Image (cartoon, rainbow over all chains, first blue to last red; front, side, top):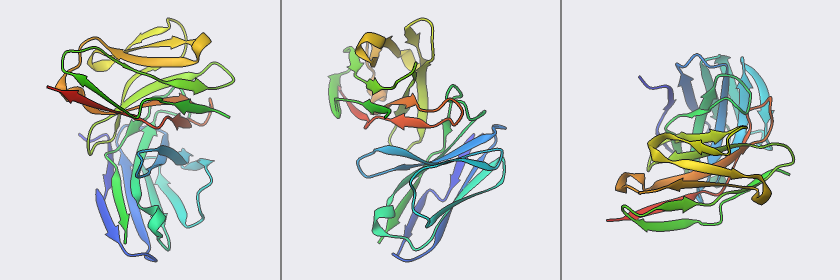
Length: 114
Length: 114
């Protein structure tokens, strides 16, 4: 059984479009995250939700809007896509928001903006 | 500000040889330290973590890491590398006890020669 799943795995789209990436975890965790990995493989946190409440919002453009309909899901919606949004986006989850709680990562969604 | 530096962008070792991947961190308090591995096209998997106690920690797949406070280092080691260890390795520090925020290093690409 997949612990943290993301859809789609690949996403190719044109500049200016709006797209969503979905994430689901079946681990019963309370906390979920979105990370962005750029072309140089640098990994940076974007958002974190605990019990559906936003607890981390790094300096991410307003075009990015996370939504957590329930504790098992954290979706990422991106408006007006730009070339610089091309990256691999990883979802992760952990038991709680403590730094001592292991984060489990999904397989990633490779977004390519043309 | 918290930061993690992995000085070696790319390392090549022969199968069966020993391995050491370097990680240096900058953090004011006692750090929570992690090593993750990312296989090609996959998400990140936790290898090991250090919170307190014994400074030599054992992880999965035969990896270990040693925390040295005086050197602000948390180097990853393996006595004998297997071809399947070829992957991207990330060191990370927990940057907030109640947020789960992880700050990652730039990653080290490990190539294993037959």
